[in-house]
Image (cartoon, rainbow, N blue to C red):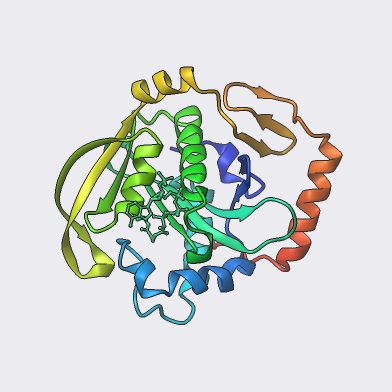
Length: 239
Ligand SMILES: CC(C)(COP(=O)(O)OP(=O)(O)OC[C@H]1O[C@@H](n2cnc3c(N)ncnc32)[C@H](O)[C@@H]1OP(=O)(O)O)[C@@H](O)C(=O)NCCC(=O)NCCS
């Protein structure tokens, strides 16, 4: 589903204020900090609560494996400017019918600043540009107006409300279902130019065409080296 480009852990998306990059072992502490909160888990389908020891590490390995296999694009949100810790996760996962399901979480201290919206917009742009997906779907618990608002701001259309299985919440819960199809996305996109770019192996994608990077490659390489050094030894998923 996802192309070779996103299956390499050097792939990253750049937005106005964020880097969206592959998860690393060194993100475990920051992820556990926000993912282990009851108020965060309550709104999600998959976050266990209580959050077991080692869960963040398990999540990182699974995310890296799914990214490498082209099944998903699970990216960590990091604020630009320095080696800052993860402030959230945004994911696009292959679901049935070649459709893509979105997920996102932002750490409480970073909420209300538009980061989820910025990350979701970038991820949706990448999905429609880099895959054949006809639509992107997202579900939000009916008790979660912040998530609903993020989807509305990203151009998603409300579809209906129904009971959805939220495995980590122990059963069926009422959820609002949203979708954004390729045509609606293209129409909205024609009116508003993208403010994102993607980087991988010296190429950059400005939301419309692949091109040489806006920044010199040597600068990109230095940034990547700094990030790798900060991340420490990497654990790679089993093939
Ligand atoms: C949902 C979530 C990702 C939003 O992250 P965020 O970075 O704060 O989102 P943004 O700042 O981009 O946008 C949030 C919007 O919701 C609005 N909002 C927040 N709380 C709200 C509430 N209780 N009622 C109505 N609107 C609310 C904000 O005002 C903002 O809209 P605005 O820009 O029009 O003012 C974050 O709250 C979160 O991680 N929640 C727990 C996990 C979760 O719910 N994930 C989604 C699962 S479907």
